[in-house]
Image (cartoon, rainbow over all chains, first blue to last red; front, top):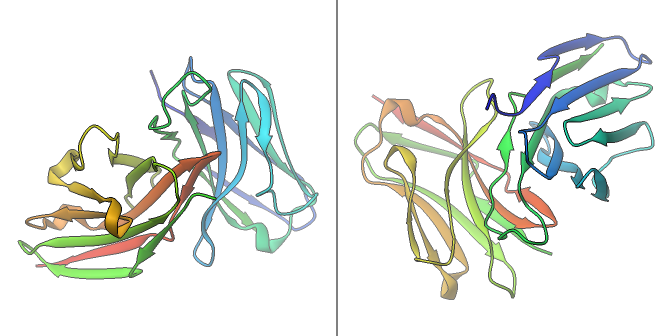
Length: 118
Length: 110
């Protein structure tokens, strides 16, 4: 398996523009996570999907952020409109975590998307 | 809620010296704990995880961690540091999603 695939790897956009980050989880995984990493706040869990359904989105910072998972093999994180303070590295991760799987199931991470909003 | 605290945002050791990175967890239920490593400009890679089968867990690259319930700790150690161990290390706990500590940057001096 190719692992978790994120695109693009780098994104530079102007303030006010819409940004869409994409993630393809590992085939067969049923859980997907979006994280944001910054120097100031470290690794923050933004949203967690299980079987394509958002389970916990309490980490989504504002209404400008939205995430979707239309099927088991694709998810998007959208920021509209983008602001300079959204500049960060965004990671997607997937796992087999679920009701019938042990809680010691690890998450596998993509390479991340480095977003710069100018 | 399950959470972890990493003591020390930056640890510096000499090559060949012992590495000790600290992690404490807060929870009244059996925790599901992990250590991840992040090399520059890369994603996170699993080092090891606590599975409750054994309190001493061995991971990749010679790292190990010991789960101590009495101290609510899951510290990461390596007997002899190598230059290639320089990276950021994260302790994490599994609850409703995996949540990470603030991270510890390990520097290895020649």
